[in-house]
Image 1 (tube, rainbow, N blue to C red):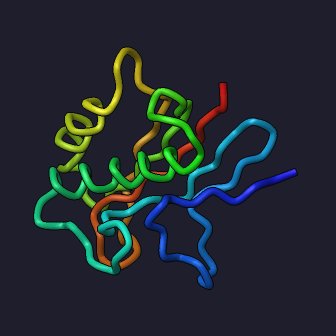
Image 2 (cartoon, rainbow, N blue to C red):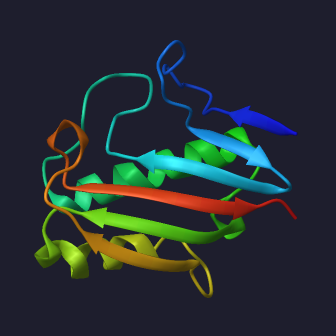
Length: 126
């Protein structure tokens, strides 16, 4: 059985996008970009702010499942310019105490809505 998970301020209802699905104790988070919660606005002033917003969006979806960052087991980072790698990593690691989840970073040509960063994730309940 599967269950849809949304952040409290989610406004994606009626679109072909589901923020997260839970199945078999795992929560599969769709790619999160730097959209400001509940709006269509983007926070892309610089890569530091963009990364913070993406991570906050991940946190909001996790919160919708009753979980936190400590429940993440795997993240995939999609980045439009690998020169941003060090700064994205610096901000990313501030969201974890102890060892962060497994992750890979993939350099891509283009991301939705012209953003520089998208992160998808898998969390586990328990």
